[in-house]
Image (tube, rainbow, N blue to C red; front, side, top):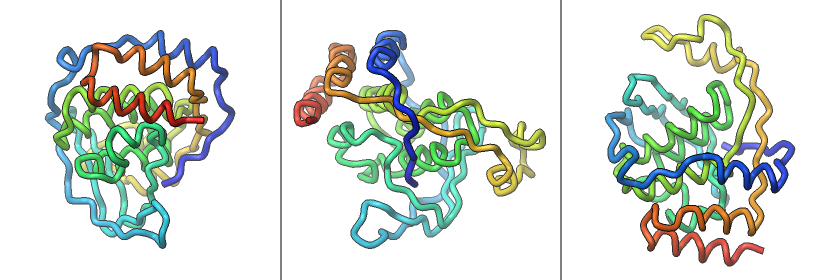
Length: 217
């Protein structure tokens, strides 16, 4: 599901974000997730594009029991993950990243939850899918810094608490969807990001990222 970009942040703001968010080593952060996926990603490719349509509902339940459901018919394209980072994982729909990417793409598009929660859930989804802690942390940092951001959503009062009888269709349709913005990702900003990862992630993954950044115009 395509995430549309709004006004870009300035280079100074992005660099400030890179420096302001504290880095944790892969071993000091979460090493596993108690969350679980419900169902499997059943989808069909649309034409020759990178878009695919879900043929069945798919869901993630996080460690706190919060549901993250994606309905059948949803069209996703991995756009919520900055393309320069695709080379690190082989693409958003490859292997263990498919489920996490579907969840992240959908909630970045409907924007019914706060963006820090959506990005952090992506991290938990990756761990639950078996992605290594180091790589899951790298990709989480990627979306936290360069992924889409939006103001806090306005949702109906009945949608504040997710219970057994929660009406996802109603809550999604009646929420006021805020406009998303995508931070800039210049070569200098990406290099600063990679430099900050030095010694904190797997060197092989960092080397792939640097190679992708070097190929950036």
